[in-house]
Image (cartoon, rainbow, N blue to C red; front, side):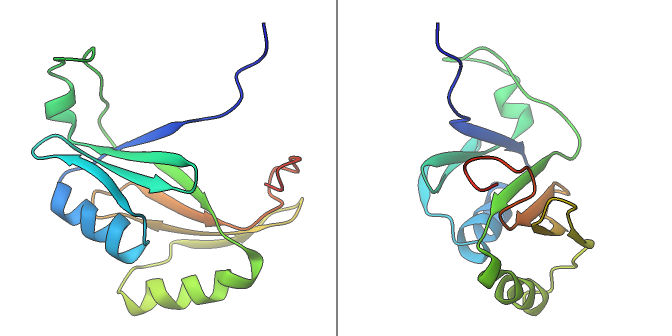
Length: 135
């Protein structure tokens, strides 16, 4: 059997779908792939998906098994080295507080900030993990 190849989707649990649509769609620029009102949003991020779920809805189950979590999650999105400063300026101009700017020992830099639900969001440049993919 071959090893699993990739992460196809990542889920963040959010408090408000409209705020999340504005943050991830309008501010970060992820195309909205689909939405189910009162339940979740699906955003395209390159060749993968970011799902924003209301935990009280997904904990109920239905077509899929119940799932969910409470509290702040974390996600890191890859950006190019030459775009980091532009992202930093865009976030600040949008009133987003940058919690931390960090340079990693292997290379790569990170900007950490929060989404409207308190999830930790990171924009990271290549090199942090030393992987063949560049990350």
